[in-house]
Length: 164
Image 1 (cartoon, one colour):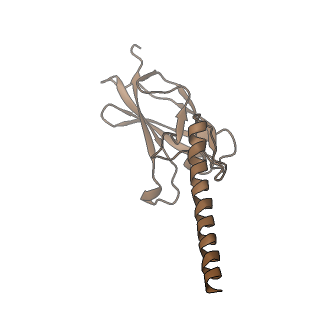
Image 2: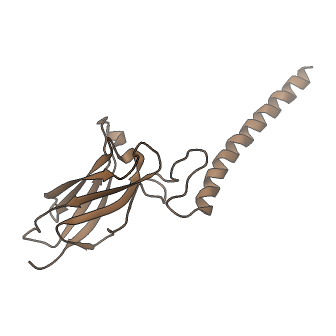
Image 3: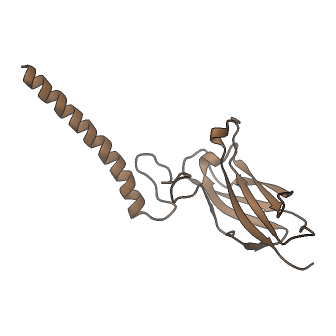
């Protein structure tokens, strides 16, 4: 009798380990099968991304490293829903010295209360700095809690269009 109970407990333990392993294995397999940023985990219904993985929290359509920008500049992209609060997050443009020359609010173009990617647009109006032709776009995750563990940002170096 005792042997049967031990056998059943062992069987339950092994079965639960198998379920746990399959859940993690399936998520990993989905990431390999679906290399696109829109790939969703069947268990979490969210993008297979975090700040430690190859799937970024912000995906930009018209900005990449050293993109030449001019005012007004419209930014289009998508961000994970938890980057938004009340359907927005902040984008800051700084010059070569870190001085803020413009701020904009990225507005969600859809339902932001999701773990999936949400399309956004933002418009930056700025005066080109008198010195230096490079700057940085800083995308700041909205963090209404104020807790530092929930802060996140993405910095993209940009170049300012030369001329008048």
